[in-house]
Image (cartoon, rainbow, N blue to C red):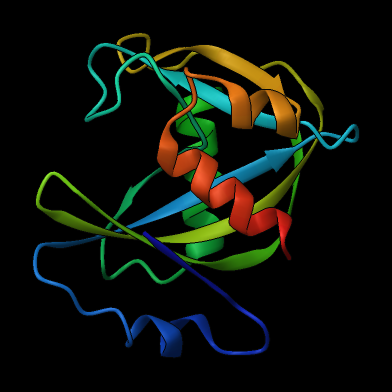
Length: 157
């Protein structure tokens, strides 16, 4: 696992540095509320992996899809519904992890939750949503190790 902070570089230029076999591209929404709590989604039985554990909202996108902001908005709506008032604040970085012989490269966004109700849109893939304090997240056995790693990296920014 590695995380690269994006400063003033072009995301498309930085992505050229990521060229792995069996590579998949995705987006992650690191969502926080005004109390600085982190929103995580509990994965369901039909999720691709890490079933029943908590993770950031996100998903796979097509390599041709370079409108990453629209992609993260689409993923949030697909997973949590349309009744959210959120602000996509900025791209934080690029996160790479290998999982089940796939190299996942994620564009990570910082998203501010303002208000609204989360709705479970894919009942087989999601069991619910919960806001965690940083300490709760880091100490929970129900939060994925990859989510803990990414959260630690984001806290440093």
